[in-house]
Image: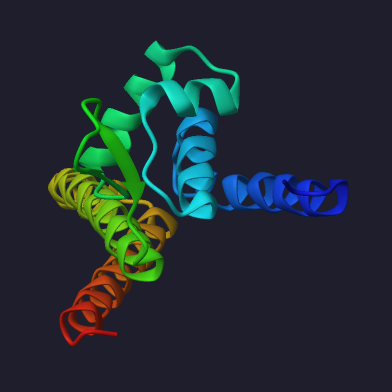
Length: 163
C-alpha cells in the first residue's frame, strides 16, 4: 500500500507526463491512458484502466485503439487471463521521435507542395505587375520548408542508425 506522499508524487508524475505526451497531439484521455500504463509498468485490461482513470470503458477502448495504431501501446498475452491486456511501449524516445518526425515531415511536405503551386501561379503573372515583396517572401518560405525537409531527412537517418 502506498502512503500519501507516494500517492501524491505518483499522481503528480502521471499528470506532468500526460501533459508532455499531449504535446505530441494525443488527446487528453489518450495521454492519461498512456502515462498511466507507462508509470504502472504492468499490463492492464480496459476494465482496470477504466476504473483507475474514472473514464468509461468505451472512451478507454477508443483511446487504446489510437495508441496501438501509433505503436505507443501494445496488446500482450498472459497465461490464464482471458481479457486483452495492454502495455506501454517502453522505448519512449524512439517511439516519440518516430511519431513526431513522421507527422512533421508529412505536414512540411504538404505545405511545401502548396507553396510550389502558389509559386507556379505567381510565375505566370506578368513581370510588370509582380510584387517583388511577395516574390521574396515566397522564396523565403520555400527555402524554410526545404530546410525543414533536410532536417527531417537527417532525423530519419539518425533514427535508422539506432540512436
